[in-house]
Image 1 (cartoon, rainbow, N blue to C red):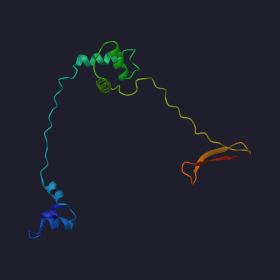
Image 2: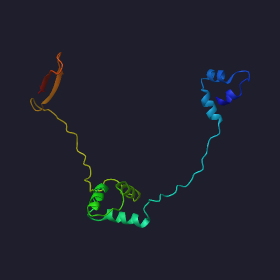
Image 3: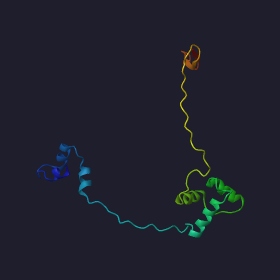
Image 4: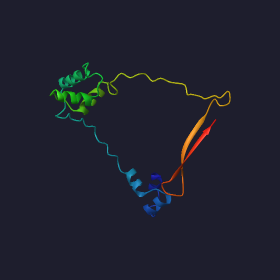
Length: 151
């Protein structure tokens, strides 16, 4: 479309050509403008970042048997009770994620798949079903309870 507008007769104003084609002028100008390509710059590491030995020390603490099945928030609280501060809770989460250990730290029981229960009546009065519902009345705040039992 922008090529069609660029090839128009110079006597036709740009706004008339754009409105005839249903194209906003801002879109035309945006397509005509060269794209800003920013060079990829390497991010500097924060001065507060943990050094590699400190990171390993935190992971070793998280891998201790007493902390093996606890989330970082509980590890953090217990370490503070002992008077030790290694890093923030978020940093513990980040280190576990980088080590590929993010997620549930407790041992999980595998999911079991059970069959959907089906009720089959092979004689009268074998299967009963019931339901209770509230019915609104003409008075505000007054409801009637409807109990239905089907044999």
